[in-house]
Image (cartoon, rainbow, N blue to C red; front, side):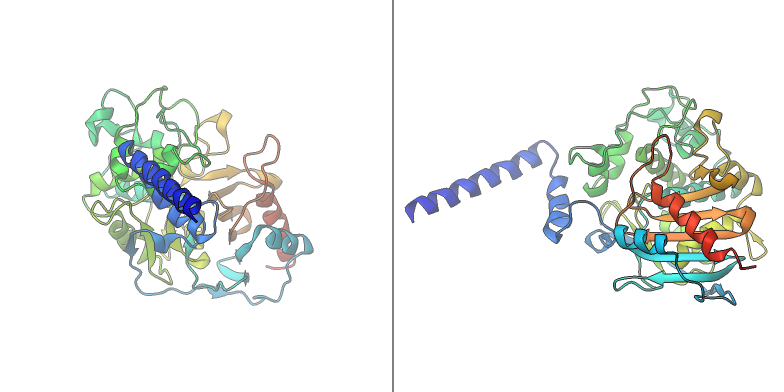
Length: 382
């Protein structure tokens, strides 16, 4: 018994020293990561984690429901799609053709109104906000220097377009495994602006694509500085309300006091509402007769900026699979809004896991499988 008490005291002391060390070295955000992730039975960020964070509300307005196709849910998933969805934990799969829902399937306890974390699909939405801020005159154009908004970057020649196209040259390390990484700190820490504004431009901006979440976070900060209002409010006024979203959404913020939106990730919404951004860009920035974004900006966004990096535009992933011009919003756990304008198709997939990357490909195998299944399922439809 005496030995047990000493052991317990020793463990308590070690734990106290670890906690003290984390606070002293400014890594105390790891404690929140442990509480949010490991103490809820997970091993990484997960699609339902948004209640564990502070959130700003993105208000919707008058709902404009999606139409249902005449063949709504009369087509069956292919056996391959069923197998992939089971294996990867798909919770929502939605096919929209000619602006009408053809097929939608929800698993577990999820439904059309279930909100899950967008993860990096928010990067595409942040880039859309950039386009709106340019259209509204708050930002001059894609070539406006970031230093106009944050003087610490005045000597870098980095532009807002460099941030959106993943060509900033910032010294961000895009690591998803280390608890000491900038990615982990940005997700769990309570002063995101401090982390971002301490970054340095260490490579020449505007030369090539290097995917960094810090780019989109700094872009969001630039947009907020330019428009002079909270990002959730601007997103609501200019997208959520005019596009007739079915629900309010939530945007994770870093802290209840700072309330800086995590623009590189973390909008909690549903499959039907995420799909609307595919429709907006497929229609060159126009929504039901209203021009929300400049068509030129939209076209630029879904075209490769660099010929040698043809998988990325401005905030959107790109593919020419099946000889189609495809653009996509993408999140770390296989969140997708895949848009194929040539065939007026939008595919939304939300779930717990993504597939493995294929050799020399910019996407995981499931991306291609979702597209193949969709074409097989809709081949007889008009």
